Length: 435
Image 1: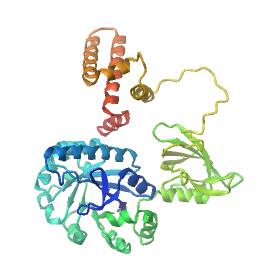
Image 2: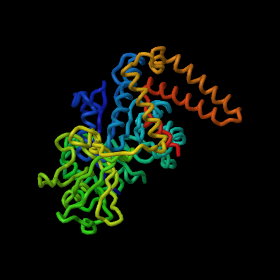
Image 3: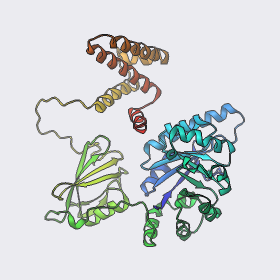
Image 4: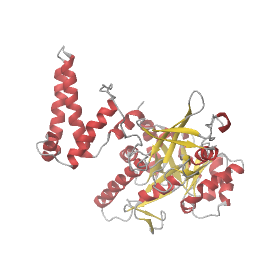
């Protein structure tokens, strides 16, 4: 089983605090912590919303919970690793809200009987792969001994119960630990069912995660590192002993830059999961983003047919070009007039970007700004009217009318999305999850 290092953010009043029981603020901006953990090679991230505690009224607690969900959405958007979240879950709707922020799993607190009872309902709705259960004692599993297929795994809050938990379940589980000596991690990871460690031992030693992974590997434990099916020796090098790398954005296939790798840069890229290159002008290896913060997280590396060029698909943070441009390729040499077959996703995004720009930078006489000025009721009225027009057009034998009406409908839906802060990326991600 692959052993994972999983930092944990305890979210309280929109700050990151020390733990469940210690409200000492460790970071006023949780997003900075997310970037730090990703840059230091965390495998996953766990977030606990503590907003339901210490509020005098239900209204205050609900408002705090909504603020926590907004923060959770931002965390999921910028995280380069999967985010799991728990806390303040009482009903199906609470799980739905967590998953709709972009988190990959929701964590049910098994110290609360209502969450145990909620397991089957949530699992049947969203799937077992969307659920973890947190527990302090394996005895809390007694209610699910015959139904553990309803969960993808567990989060053990009591590290003194590792052996008992492994004996009580066939599910993989994470162990939450406070502060222990780093060599204690090897002892914990040695248990077959332990798939990861989270808590302040990982948080406080985030900068040592890569070293700890290497230590685990030296001790025969599998850790989450990129494995290459092609060796450096199999790649064909140029006269300088380098291999060119073409870099693309994994989301839209935009070509971002071209660079070179030597052997060490190749192996360090596999080791860290972040793009390393060799600078011919400086005659040295460099980690992309080391000075700018514009890191490139590896999604895939592919060799061409001759094994003399690498195509890297990456998640790009910020700009790829040293000039500050998103891509290095912006100096046009020549071109002909041509028509490019429209990519639906590109069209949707371009139109949506224009609508958002109108919202942020109003333009006199703009119909889009007219809708924003009139407010949500007007926008919803137009969405309803255009939906009705689609139904009417569908009764007409001329399919062109349907095209026109669907276009009008989608435009008004995008105005609604912009007004409510919903993006196409969120919508398409949700659709993808329904396959």
